[in-house]
Image 1 (cartoon, rainbow, N blue to C red):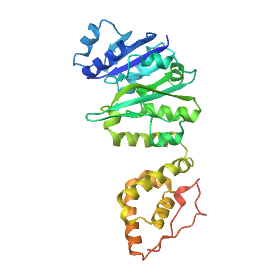
Image 2 (cartoon, rainbow, N blue to C red; image 1 turned 180 degrees about the vertical axis):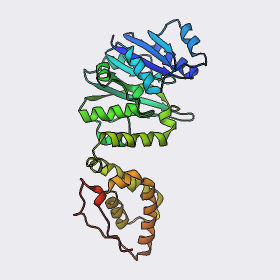
Image 3 (cartoon, one colour; image 1 turned 90 degrees about the vertical axis):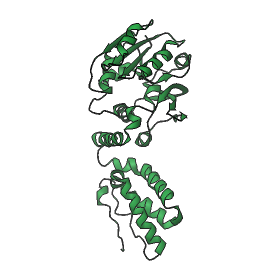
Image 4 (cartoon, rainbow, N blue to C red; image 1 turned 135 degrees about the vertical axis):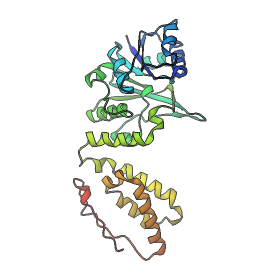
Length: 310
């Protein structure tokens, strides 16, 4: 068996119907379909029983969240590759799996492109050919458009259930750090619906991501990793909110301030407020910010200080 398609669902019958239709229309046939429902009372069980083309395995019972359900699906899978296509999401075209498996290399993870669909908009998400840890500090690949070696998932005991929203993203970070091979195929694999927990609970997802970095990264690595990322983010906010006061000293101060990346990462909103303070200072031309780079120590970023004259 080449592919295990694992679908998790909870009280989303209409979405499950859409997912099932897209799977059953595929010209590719070397797959199994596994459905894990969280004990829905919306007619999901009756729908699954009525399907002419039954899933290879399905169950409807309570679970402890989306990653517990994914791990259940993984436990019942037998394919060389796994694709997690959740209820509501759909395969993009009828021959898309044929096109993927005519080109798929023998690697650890193959990630493809996706169309993101919201209530009033849709857009094509294309990913770079090379992924880095820096990429994952700001972005993520689409789980529903990624083919993962089943053996790799089994080696890591599936997804951590300590996180409710970002456990798949956590797996990408771990595998990047372990040197696993990610290969990009520029094929649109799925339509991803922007109504899931990861798209709607953004603050919770942000907090979980910070927990992941606290779990995985030693303190001395964080300033090195977040340096360029947060330089760009801070400069973006300064330009957007205070464009009328832009000057070379302000940009220089923003970049220097962002070198203390532990602080910037913890509270970007405070950085914006400080940007407003900088505006007033530069606008009045009565003050300037003095600093020295020679005291910055990447091993101890918390020791970096400014010599402010005001």
